[in-house]
Length: 393
Image (cartoon, rainbow, N blue to C red; front, side):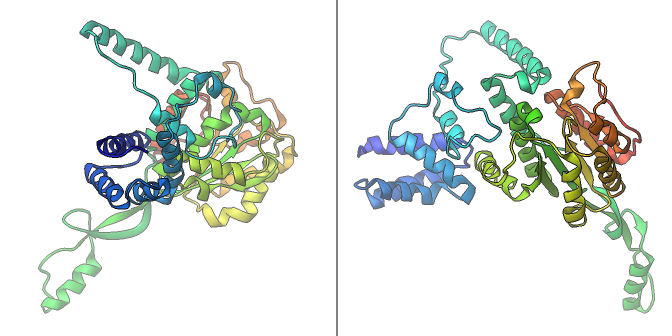
């Protein structure tokens, strides 16, 4: 490592790289980092790492990202070329790159210079950007390039899912609006010899509506599994009460893993937990496991269930119909997302889909960003009690 003013400039540049990677770093932390490195010295590399780690890392989920970025930045390694990145395995959760590596490489990627760009060029660029965004919204997840997938993942991290809270049977005190609360009014009157000086009011109490997501990770869903896991991470961070499960030949709960703030670390933990990637599909057995083991623990009657699957089931259709009927009776809404609905002439003719369809409240596609936006609009309108099965165009 170099010393003097050069090391101070490098620390400032390292802080900027961490900020681009998603860490919240202010000017005060940069000043603390400069002081910490000055106190420990630069003779030992590990001392510098520990000093910067103690200043910049606030959460355990940020540790892996910090370590990867520190190693790449201070060793002077350039990011992996695009040709090598394209050769990386494209499994749902690739185990080869360490956690945080993707975001570290993205943070170290040099920004393109914009010198000499005229106003007319900027207008053309804005038009092209808008057009590209429109194309990306309607492009199938299975046909996207690596760059387009990265853009979709970045977009999913910014989404906020408007699942409306449900109205409970309980009431809470209101200031000047609502219904009269006669019981509380009489209790207050007892303090003043029975004279009513002010009328107490009450308002209905609202609670967040629970959401349970069961995602198919079998071989027929492999082309969509990568982005769907990012989708699960986005809604887990955007809503308060979300339970996430994946299934192929068995059911696995991944709620705890998806609650990690860093998406790379979260999906790496999911990859280590789930054992049946890209295998067969037994939806009926997975639903039976959920109904008998998890239903009463994570799904009240006011909850919404979201099943993501193409319905290509290898199990018993009678078992699937029986478990779908029980699940439908136990939740507020049952929504099925099927990527095969992207085809205009698709008909649910498989045994599994025909067995499940009578118990589905809403039947929607999930193959591009536009379909996820349609899902968001549906979740926002659930309390309007729109009955019947909905099939998107």
